[in-house]
Length: 207
Figure 1 (cartoon, one colour):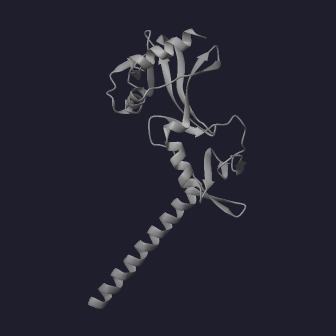
Figure 2 (cartoon, rainbow, N blue to C red; figure 1 turned 120 degrees about the horizontal axis):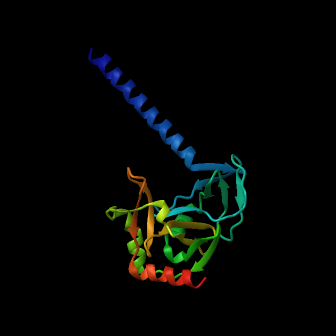
Figure 3 (cartoon, helix red, strand yellow; figure 1 turned 60 degrees about the horizontal axis):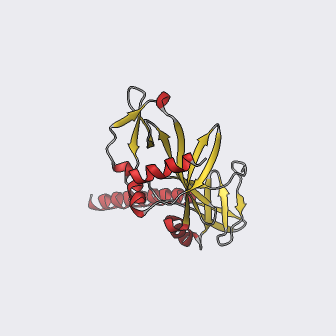
């Protein structure tokens, strides 16, 4: 009985190891692709309040790997994601995680057109922005009461990656749109720092 028990334990352990290996293999496959004999790794962005993406207006077909021209990275684009050569991805991740490698803008939606204005954001304002997801959501707005839309957008200095958060002009102030609704079809909003709010109004008035 003891030998049978030991054999059963060994079989179970081997099965468990095989399952783990399959899972790891699948995850690895999701995060890497091969192109012309090279391995490329998915470029992971910061997990923060901003929505990140590849900064390009070009059309790319789905399910096809497209090489991307870049002065430093060997990169490709595939189904909405950027992939960097495996030997370069660590350096690329470090570059795109550093806010010093970005330029900041306010993009206003005016008459179905986007108007982009450069803006400087202080360290205190930036800290506030990154912490907005942790702030209590008690203020709400109705869509019909919105007076205008805009976004805070940062673009990497190599013009490859962008990130943004959406804003709304409501009751003579700019708010962060959480995209979270309550049962009354009202959206939760979070106010911006007064200094940043004033900068945005000054830019809007200059258009």
